Amino acid sequence: MNWSLGGRFGILAPVQRFATTLVLFLVGLLALTSLGRAEEHRATRLGHPATRFAPTMHTVDDLRARFRDEKLWPDFGVVLQQWGWSGDLQDLRRAGLTAEVIEGKIPVGTRMPFMSSRKNGAAICLRNVIWAGEAPVEAYAFNFSSKGRLYRCVIPKPCSNFFLEDLGPAPIPMPALALQCNAPDRQFTGRPIKVTVALKNTGDGAESRTSIALPIPPGASFVSATEGGEAILDRVTWEVAGLATNSLREFTAVFTTERPGRMEFRPVAIGTLAGQANCECHTQVLGVYAVLVEVIDLEDPVEIGKPVNYVITVTNQGNQTGTGIRVVCTVPDSQEFVSGSGSTPVQAIGRTIKMSPLPSLDGKQVATWRVQTRALRPDDSRFKVEFATDQFEKPIRREESTRLF
Image (cartoon, rainbow, N blue to C red):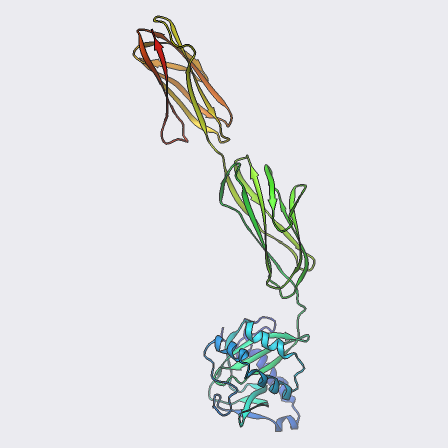
């Protein structure tokens, strides 16, 4: 983000503009003593090899390189010592290596409290520097805290000649909790559902202790948890000690259920300082539809002219309801249909027997039909059954052999 003289810049927001702060320096420095005015320096060009603090910068990586340079780094200390700065030099270096950096421009006429430079190759501190060039100069800037004060470090790109602005007392570091929940989109009943809760401290201060509670959804059974998680009454809990800034911790709990439907997980984290954070995720639990189709004859072999009795049984072995249950039987030509009954009415048309559709069959439930035929002639006969539901793309076929003599 660029900054300019007409912009607004909040001193506690590192991504906002800082030109207003520079204007405040202009106003504040109108009251300088005559001694201070005598030390005034006017800069009309930046980047001369003889006076620049370090080589020209083109990217943020170039800025980071200035703070990594072990040969250059002592010169930062020399300049700040001449300025009389009372902060911790390492705070500045850490910020130079890690802080968020913004881009902007230093307007013409800006008065800076000081600026690093060089004289005969040695690092020096120039006080009360006015940028008197023909146009604004591009610069990088970042904020940092040191010994209870908030500062902004500004570094013009052409010369790397840095200076600091004192922005006042630093805010008290405070933690902030962010919580994220992850669970599988879908899972079948009876299979493990792994739920991961990620806790992160997004603030600028450490959190001494955080409690996480993950309520166990209705119909779910707790299996296990990582990181010392315990199932207490209707929730899984974790205790987290010493969560540093930007630290990320993950916690996992495993559940199972025999109940199809949407299972919702709503973890809550409460910190000693940071307050509360919450989130949610869910898993769609799918029931298992498994059907067993059986057909048996009650007597075998059967004498000619005698009745042949068949029993057709459909068992829903799963826990998902089956719908549109349809059963069709075919009587061999060595037999003739006599009667039928069962879970739905039975009707015969020629050698085809149709059971009226059964609208639904719940999990673990059984539907049964009985069909009676008469043996007409000797045969190694086959009584055929075809079963279909809305849940199956292809029908299930069964047959029962009966010896007629």
